[in-house]
Image (tube, rainbow, N blue to C red; front, side, top):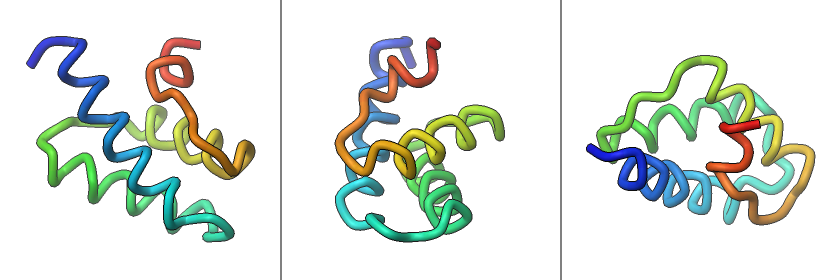
Amino acid sequence: MTDQERFEAIQAVVDRVTSWQDGATEGTVADELRRGADEVGVELSEDEVRRLADAIEEEHAAIDARTVLTR
């Protein structure tokens, strides 16, 4: 899987989780990110899960996974 394909898969997971997780606890968001990543065959480190979950919780809107993970 190329970097581009990886980020596209992660973005799809982030978009899905963001669309229905408004108001969910960080633990729920992190669990759903892990589950989604497993479903699309992408490995996320615990740090990546935490950073994505934090961004979803803080921004309550669409986020760009590549931007969050390359900060």
